[in-house]
Image 1 (cartoon, rainbow, N blue to C red):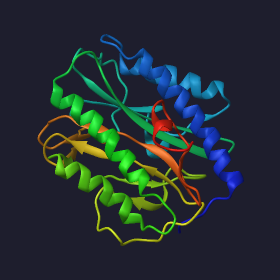
Image 2 (image 1 turned 90 degrees about the horizontal axis):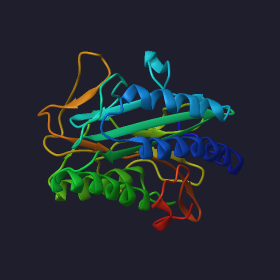
Image 3 (image 1 turned 135 degrees about the horizontal axis):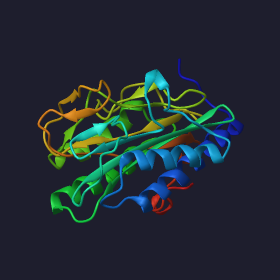
Length: 257
Protein backbone atom coordinates (compact mmCIF):
# COMPACT_ATOMS: atom_id res chain seq x y z
CA UNK A 1 0.00 0.00 0.00
CA UNK A 2 1.34 3.41 -0.97
CA UNK A 3 1.11 5.90 1.89
CA UNK A 4 1.01 9.66 1.46
CA UNK A 5 2.67 11.64 4.23
CA UNK A 6 1.43 14.80 5.89
CA UNK A 7 3.56 17.94 5.99
CA UNK A 8 4.35 17.17 9.65
CA UNK A 9 5.48 13.66 8.74
CA UNK A 10 7.61 14.94 5.87
CA UNK A 11 9.30 17.33 8.28
CA UNK A 12 10.12 14.38 10.57
CA UNK A 13 11.61 12.49 7.63
CA UNK A 14 13.62 15.61 6.79
CA UNK A 15 14.98 15.71 10.36
CA UNK A 16 16.08 12.08 10.09
CA UNK A 17 17.55 12.93 6.70
CA UNK A 18 19.66 15.70 8.18
CA UNK A 19 21.31 13.16 10.46
CA UNK A 20 22.14 11.01 7.43
CA UNK A 21 23.53 13.98 5.51
CA UNK A 22 25.74 15.08 8.40
CA UNK A 23 27.14 11.56 8.67
CA UNK A 24 27.77 11.19 4.94
CA UNK A 25 29.45 14.57 4.67
CA UNK A 26 31.76 13.67 7.57
CA UNK A 27 32.57 10.31 6.00
CA UNK A 28 33.27 11.96 2.67
CA UNK A 29 35.89 14.14 4.36
CA UNK A 30 37.40 11.13 6.13
CA UNK A 31 37.85 9.00 3.02
CA UNK A 32 41.51 8.62 2.03
CA UNK A 33 43.89 5.81 1.16
CA UNK A 34 44.58 3.66 4.22
CA UNK A 35 41.33 4.12 6.12
CA UNK A 36 39.29 0.96 6.69
CA UNK A 37 35.60 0.65 6.00
CA UNK A 38 35.12 -0.57 9.57
CA UNK A 39 36.53 2.74 10.82
CA UNK A 40 33.97 4.54 8.69
CA UNK A 41 31.20 2.35 10.09
CA UNK A 42 32.20 2.92 13.71
CA UNK A 43 32.25 6.66 13.17
CA UNK A 44 28.87 6.58 11.45
CA UNK A 45 27.19 4.61 14.22
CA UNK A 46 28.55 6.89 16.95
CA UNK A 47 27.52 10.01 15.02
CA UNK A 48 24.00 8.72 14.35
CA UNK A 49 23.50 7.81 18.01
CA UNK A 50 24.83 11.20 19.13
CA UNK A 51 21.69 12.73 17.60
CA UNK A 52 19.45 10.37 19.54
CA UNK A 53 18.79 8.45 16.33
CA UNK A 54 19.16 4.76 15.53
CA UNK A 55 21.23 3.29 12.67
CA UNK A 56 18.41 1.95 10.49
CA UNK A 57 20.57 -0.60 8.71
CA UNK A 58 22.08 -2.28 11.77
CA UNK A 59 20.28 -5.56 12.35
CA UNK A 60 17.93 -5.00 9.41
CA UNK A 61 17.27 -8.53 8.14
CA UNK A 62 20.49 -9.44 9.94
CA UNK A 63 22.76 -6.81 8.35
CA UNK A 64 25.75 -6.45 10.73
CA UNK A 65 26.70 -2.78 10.29
CA UNK A 66 25.38 0.79 10.37
CA UNK A 67 26.36 1.71 6.81
CA UNK A 68 26.91 -0.14 3.55
CA UNK A 69 30.36 0.30 2.02
CA UNK A 70 30.62 -0.95 -1.57
CA UNK A 71 33.98 -0.66 -3.33
CA UNK A 72 34.71 -0.67 -7.08
CA UNK A 73 32.78 -3.62 -8.60
CA UNK A 74 30.57 -3.84 -5.50
CA UNK A 75 27.25 -2.20 -6.34
CA UNK A 76 25.38 -2.08 -3.02
CA UNK A 77 25.13 -3.73 0.42
CA UNK A 78 28.87 -4.09 1.02
CA UNK A 79 29.72 -4.99 4.62
CA UNK A 80 32.31 -2.81 6.42
CA UNK A 81 35.50 -4.69 7.32
CA UNK A 82 39.22 -4.23 7.91
CA UNK A 83 39.70 -3.64 4.20
CA UNK A 84 41.70 -0.48 3.58
CA UNK A 85 40.79 1.95 0.85
CA UNK A 86 43.44 2.42 -1.82
CA UNK A 87 44.33 5.12 -4.29
CA UNK A 88 42.14 4.64 -7.34
CA UNK A 89 39.19 3.05 -5.54
CA UNK A 90 35.64 4.34 -5.62
CA UNK A 91 33.35 3.65 -2.69
CA UNK A 92 29.59 3.89 -2.35
CA UNK A 93 28.42 4.66 1.18
CA UNK A 94 24.74 4.10 1.95
CA UNK A 95 23.40 5.37 5.26
CA UNK A 96 20.05 5.31 7.03
CA UNK A 97 18.94 6.84 10.33
CA UNK A 98 15.68 6.50 12.24
CA UNK A 99 14.75 9.50 14.38
CA UNK A 100 11.50 9.71 16.35
CA UNK A 101 10.15 6.80 14.33
CA UNK A 102 10.89 8.20 10.86
CA UNK A 103 13.61 7.21 8.41
CA UNK A 104 16.10 9.16 6.30
CA UNK A 105 18.10 7.34 3.62
CA UNK A 106 20.82 8.47 1.22
CA UNK A 107 23.96 7.27 -0.55
CA UNK A 108 27.00 8.79 -2.23
CA UNK A 109 29.85 7.43 -4.32
CA UNK A 110 33.24 8.92 -3.47
CA UNK A 111 36.46 8.80 -5.50
CA UNK A 112 39.61 7.87 -3.56
CA UNK A 113 42.56 9.80 -4.93
CA UNK A 114 43.04 9.73 -8.69
CA UNK A 115 41.06 7.47 -11.03
CA UNK A 116 40.76 7.12 -14.83
CA UNK A 117 38.49 9.54 -16.65
CA UNK A 118 35.90 6.86 -17.41
CA UNK A 119 35.47 6.23 -13.68
CA UNK A 120 35.10 9.94 -12.99
CA UNK A 121 32.42 10.07 -15.68
CA UNK A 122 30.66 7.04 -14.20
CA UNK A 123 30.39 8.71 -10.80
CA UNK A 124 29.32 12.07 -12.26
CA UNK A 125 26.80 10.47 -14.61
CA UNK A 126 25.23 8.47 -11.80
CA UNK A 127 24.70 11.73 -9.91
CA UNK A 128 23.23 13.34 -13.02
CA UNK A 129 20.92 10.36 -13.57
CA UNK A 130 19.64 10.86 -10.03
CA UNK A 131 18.95 14.54 -10.66
CA UNK A 132 17.11 13.78 -13.87
CA UNK A 133 14.97 11.24 -12.06
CA UNK A 134 14.16 13.68 -9.27
CA UNK A 135 13.11 16.26 -11.85
CA UNK A 136 10.38 13.84 -12.95
CA UNK A 137 9.00 13.46 -9.41
CA UNK A 138 6.20 15.93 -9.99
CA UNK A 139 2.49 15.82 -9.28
CA UNK A 140 0.61 14.32 -12.21
CA UNK A 141 3.56 12.37 -13.62
CA UNK A 142 3.70 8.59 -13.33
CA UNK A 143 6.09 6.56 -11.21
CA UNK A 144 7.89 5.03 -14.16
CA UNK A 145 8.58 8.48 -15.57
CA UNK A 146 11.13 8.62 -12.74
CA UNK A 147 12.46 5.19 -13.67
CA UNK A 148 12.73 5.96 -17.37
CA UNK A 149 14.64 9.18 -16.69
CA UNK A 150 17.47 7.09 -15.21
CA UNK A 151 17.35 4.47 -17.94
CA UNK A 152 17.25 6.93 -20.83
CA UNK A 153 20.18 8.98 -19.56
CA UNK A 154 22.33 6.02 -18.49
CA UNK A 155 21.84 3.74 -21.45
CA UNK A 156 22.50 6.58 -23.90
CA UNK A 157 25.95 6.75 -22.30
CA UNK A 158 26.56 3.03 -22.49
CA UNK A 159 26.07 2.08 -18.84
CA UNK A 160 24.41 -1.04 -17.51
CA UNK A 161 21.36 -0.13 -15.42
CA UNK A 162 20.93 -2.55 -12.50
CA UNK A 163 17.54 -4.23 -12.60
CA UNK A 164 17.64 -6.54 -9.58
CA UNK A 165 17.66 -3.72 -6.99
CA UNK A 166 15.72 -0.48 -6.87
CA UNK A 167 14.56 2.54 -4.91
CA UNK A 168 11.54 2.50 -2.64
CA UNK A 169 9.09 4.40 -0.53
CA UNK A 170 10.32 5.80 2.79
CA UNK A 171 8.48 6.69 5.99
CA UNK A 172 8.31 4.84 9.28
CA UNK A 173 10.04 1.89 7.61
CA UNK A 174 13.12 1.92 5.41
CA UNK A 175 11.48 -0.03 2.60
CA UNK A 176 7.89 0.86 1.86
CA UNK A 177 5.72 0.79 -1.25
CA UNK A 178 6.19 1.62 -4.03
CA UNK A 179 9.31 0.10 -5.49
CA UNK A 180 11.16 2.57 -7.73
CA UNK A 181 13.14 0.73 -10.42
CA UNK A 182 15.77 2.48 -12.51
CA UNK A 183 14.16 1.38 -15.76
CA UNK A 184 10.59 1.40 -17.02
CA UNK A 185 8.06 2.55 -19.55
CA UNK A 186 7.29 6.29 -19.30
CA UNK A 187 3.68 7.26 -18.73
CA UNK A 188 2.95 4.13 -16.70
CA UNK A 189 2.75 3.27 -13.01
CA UNK A 190 0.85 5.00 -10.20
CA UNK A 191 0.22 8.72 -10.51
CA UNK A 192 2.49 10.86 -8.35
CA UNK A 193 0.58 12.71 -5.66
CA UNK A 194 1.56 15.23 -2.98
CA UNK A 195 2.90 13.54 0.14
CA UNK A 196 4.61 10.66 -1.64
CA UNK A 197 8.10 10.14 -0.19
CA UNK A 198 10.60 8.11 -2.18
CA UNK A 199 14.22 7.01 -2.06
CA UNK A 200 15.47 7.30 -5.64
CA UNK A 201 18.77 5.50 -6.17
CA UNK A 202 20.38 4.94 -9.57
CA UNK A 203 22.88 2.06 -9.69
CA UNK A 204 24.96 2.24 -12.87
CA UNK A 205 27.61 -0.20 -14.01
CA UNK A 206 30.50 0.47 -16.36
CA UNK A 207 29.73 -2.84 -18.09
CA UNK A 208 26.82 -5.26 -17.94
CA UNK A 209 23.67 -4.54 -15.96
CA UNK A 210 23.83 -8.05 -14.51
CA UNK A 211 24.82 -8.53 -10.88
CA UNK A 212 25.53 -11.34 -8.43
CA UNK A 213 25.49 -11.70 -4.65
CA UNK A 214 28.85 -12.48 -3.06
CA UNK A 215 29.50 -15.36 -0.66
CA UNK A 216 28.80 -13.16 2.37
CA UNK A 217 25.13 -13.20 1.34
CA UNK A 218 24.93 -9.40 1.17
CA UNK A 219 27.42 -7.71 -1.13
CA UNK A 220 26.07 -7.22 -4.65
CA UNK A 221 28.79 -7.23 -7.33
CA UNK A 222 28.76 -6.68 -11.07
CA UNK A 223 28.74 -9.93 -13.03
CA UNK A 224 31.70 -8.80 -15.15
CA UNK A 225 33.49 -7.25 -12.15
CA UNK A 226 33.63 -3.82 -13.75
CA UNK A 227 33.11 -0.77 -11.50
CA UNK A 228 29.70 0.47 -10.40
CA UNK A 229 28.39 3.67 -8.84
CA UNK A 230 25.37 4.32 -6.63
CA UNK A 231 23.69 7.55 -5.61
CA UNK A 232 20.53 8.02 -3.52
CA UNK A 233 18.36 10.75 -2.05
CA UNK A 234 15.09 10.72 -0.11
CA UNK A 235 12.64 13.10 -1.79
CA UNK A 236 9.07 14.30 -1.26
CA UNK A 237 6.59 14.96 -4.04
CA UNK A 238 4.87 18.30 -3.33
CA UNK A 239 2.56 20.69 -5.15
CA UNK A 240 5.58 22.95 -5.66
CA UNK A 241 7.76 20.22 -7.14
CA UNK A 242 10.23 17.69 -5.76
CA UNK A 243 11.93 18.49 -2.45
CA UNK A 244 15.10 16.65 -1.41
CA UNK A 245 14.87 15.63 2.24
CA UNK A 246 18.48 14.40 2.34
CA UNK A 247 20.03 17.29 0.42
CA UNK A 248 23.81 17.14 0.03
CA UNK A 249 26.22 19.84 -1.07
CA UNK A 250 25.39 20.83 -4.63
CA UNK A 251 21.81 19.55 -4.59
CA UNK A 252 20.45 23.00 -3.77
CA UNK A 253 21.82 24.24 -7.09
CA UNK A 254 19.25 22.07 -8.83
CA UNK A 255 16.29 21.81 -6.46
CA UNK A 256 14.39 23.58 -3.72
CA UNK A 257 15.32 22.06 -0.38
